[in-house]
Amino acid sequence: MRDSARRALADAPSVDDLDLLASTLRGHMHVLIPEVEQLAVRRHDTAGISARACVDEARRKLNLGNGDIEAVRVSVVQKLARSVDALCRHYVALGGADA
Image 1 (tube, rainbow, N blue to C red):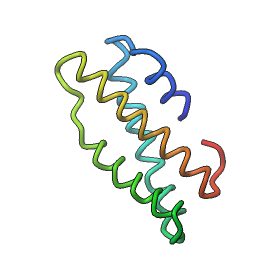
Image 2 (cartoon, helix red, strand yellow):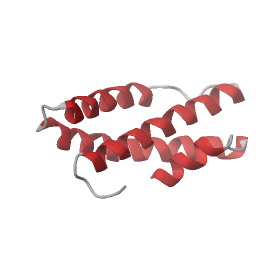
Image 3 (cartoon, rainbow, N blue to C red):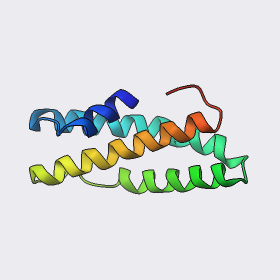
Image 4 (tube, helix red, strand yellow):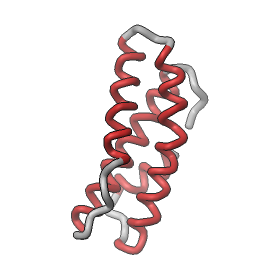
């Protein structure tokens, strides 16, 4: 999961890869969101509150369209990638295995 996010953030993906990468990242988010939420719901400390905020933001980003213009498509993929990376970090911080 983190590798997909790193690829999207390291350098601008090719136009041909944008749709596949966006779909892959969204799939990762669909897996990570409930996992992070489950770990965070029992926590009332800063880590739990921060993780729940990350989950809320990730859900909002799932509603982003892919965009019609290449620059918008790249921006959407990068936003999804940042959410995947943040969800992975929260998952590990809350006691989950490395994602």
